Amino acid sequence: MNKKLVTGILALAMCLNVGVITMVYAEETATSNTISISGEAAKIRIDNKETKVLLSEELKEVKENAKEKLKEKDEKIKELKEKIEGRKDNYKKLESLLQKKIGLINARLELLKSDTSAEAILKVEALKAQLSKTESQITRLDKSIATEKNLLKEKVKEQYTSEELAKIQEVAQILKEHNDLKLLPVQNIFAKGKNIKFDLPPVIKDGRTLIPIRALSEAYGFDVKWDAETKKITITKGDNVLVLSVDSNKAIVNGKEVELDVPAKMYKVNNENARTVVPLRFIIEKMGLNVNWDEETQTIDIDDEKVVVDDENTTEQDAVKLDEELNEIDDEVNETIVTEETASDVLEGEDTDIDEEEDVEDDVEDDVEDDVEDEETTTAEETSTVQDLTVE
Image (cartoon, rainbow, N blue to C red; front, side, top):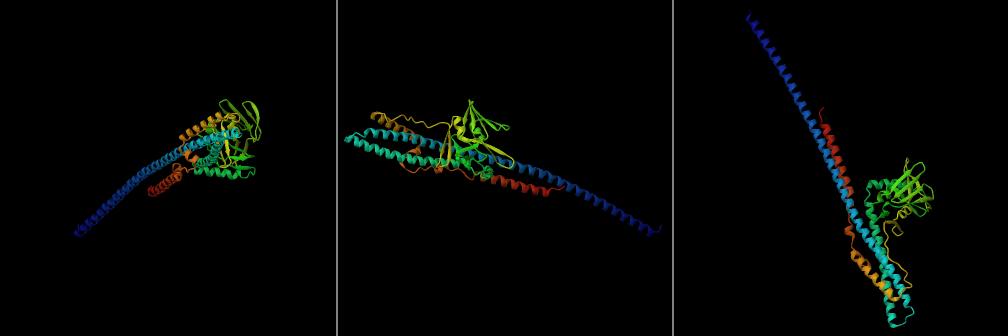
């Protein structure tokens, strides 16, 4: 065979073999790269899943911490409310005692009217000085009681979240359309040792306050049943059973019919729903509780007991008996002062420094909401970034 022909054939064969090897190598390399990329994608997806779980756990932790902060705030408010209520009750007791003292002093002065002896004149001067001092003390106590009630209003309002207050305000705007109604701020009604919370504002109609019964039932454990067909409300607590009907001035108390100054009413609170409100004083008093309206502070104070001071007729008592009564009153006043350290300052006309103990972190709720909002924003952003990095 021609030598040149053989050489050409061998060269061509070598070229073809190199091409095949190159093609195979290129294909293997591509396959290897694909496997590598797929592996990285799977790894990213796994990492993304773990990151989402981690972010979810962090958000859950922030929300749990937020709940704990709000719980601590509620406990602090409750503690401060109890302190304020304690001072207020002591001031009210002192005021009742001093009111009785005034009656005793006036009775004693009446007995001394006809006595012109030097001793009697000195006694009259001393009694008049006591009378003037006692009247001044009552005036200061009145002012201090009003201060405590205003402090209570602040603490009651702090028990509502900003969202709750916003919803109450929405309902208030609707109720304002009724020209015969006056709205009372939710914080203006409080009860000793109880947490009364409203989801719509109390209203005043014809001089009587009407409130949603749910607020009282939750605070005092009343059993309440509503008959939608007859629009009757049955309220039960122990042996007491009250039955009221919407728009009716008649009520049934333990089987007996009684007259109401103002009936239970039903008002629309949005386009779909209406709510029933009942006369507060009627319900409270028929359930054996006490309610007091304070015109100055525009507050309603509910209590389960009255401050009772024996107020027997003093006009027919003799001088010795009246002097003994006055001494007993002074002793009881002093005992009451011992139980409340600020009372002495109030009676003596000195300033009481109680502001620092009333301080509560007013911005706790805002801080909590900010913490949750920030964490939710961070979670959303990081989740979005994770999704952007995910390789399908």
